[in-house]
Image (cartoon, rainbow, N blue to C red; front, side):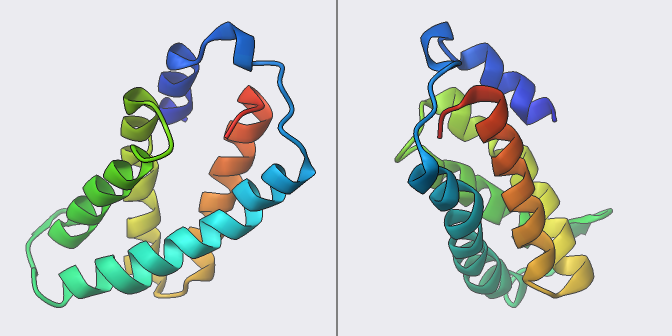
Amino acid sequence: MPALWLITLATPAQFLLRWPGTQVFVLAVVVLPLLEEIVFRLGVHDWLRGRIRRRWGPLSAANLLTAVLFAGAHLLAHPPAWALATFFPALVFGVLWERHARLWSPASVHAFYNLIYFCCLGVV
């Protein structure tokens, strides 16, 4: 939720009431969370975890680096403040992945984050 607060601070008021449409909603809440979690958890996170074993409490170095890359990837489609705000949810997704080792866990939470983001701001 702190990430949503950061996003709302960076969102111009003219975007708050815009509904991008059902296709964008399905893409943002169903398709992209699943694809991003496949790439970032099954791909990047697992690759890094196999090479870097360092941990700080519940956070692994693989999770931290994956979250940095996740936020960096969001720079391609979002303003810097929005992309930065994805770093903290990415850490949550990574902890879920490491704890449960099931793609459904981070993908469903990711979809929920996107749903809240979409419903609060009406933008993607």
